[in-house]
Amino acid sequence: MRVLFLLMTVFLLNAVAVPVLTAQEEFPQKLSQEEWAGAKKEIDLSTGLKMKYVEMGQREGETLILLHGMTDNSRSWSLIADQFTGKYRVIMPDQRGHGDSGKPDQRMYLPSDYAYDLAALMDAKGLEKANFIGHSLGSMILQTFAVNYPEKVGKIVLVASAPVTFDSLGRELYDAAVAFGQNQPDDEFMASWYANPNPVDENFLKREMAESKKIPPHAWRAITKGSAAFNLVPFIDELKAPTLILWGDQDGFFDRQAQEALKKSIPQAQFIAYEKHGHNLQWEIPGKMAADIIKFFESN
Image (cartoon, rainbow, N blue to C red; front, side):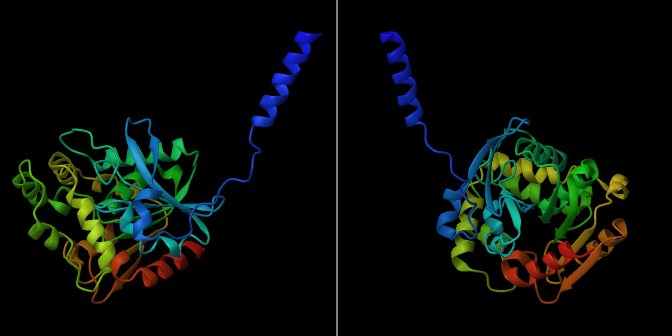
């Protein structure tokens, strides 16, 4: 009897020690620039990548995944993310080679590698389908993803985009990265890399530039080389997702000719051009851009 009493006592003490389960903590609705880096979570993907990401908005809302541009990171969306958090579960990864995610020592990161990571992220988080916004390189990754994983794609938005061909970015950026040698890019290069035709929040831009500059030289080379070594055009007719293309007519990377080619390759796409705005619309006009995207998402 004494043994039985002791066993029951241990059981009850352990039961009391177990915390009462409460409702899951809500995701943040808004993050300051100072809070952004600390809000990143980490996840191990089946591709072998340790990925960092920021998650905001409604836990039970529709999923919206935002893909940043070349050498950027999840912070690239920090000026616009809170425009979507009222309805959506917003996920913003630092993609392969970028931000605080893994930077494998590969010769190149192909758009297909990024698409594979994205599929693995969705699987790891139990997400069957999502809407997407991709900026610049992120828009090329998104095109690749939509062709290869159509079952995972709802609606997509391509921002400051172009057809995914060998010539879209060419090897000029790769040659610039090679010229870094084993050094980080200098301040002059970074100033030109992040130039905008309209004012951008200075606190944000300073932090974004500093984080981009910290990317190791091997990753700069892998990112730029992979972008110049991939051609999706023969398969782009397999992209069936409802698509919105956004472009600023002062875009220094992708001109009007590139937009005409993109519209031709995705004939069902809607297209909006913003006069006197540049490559980084989500920094220059986040409110206007978000309003147009939400209208597209909510349309039939």
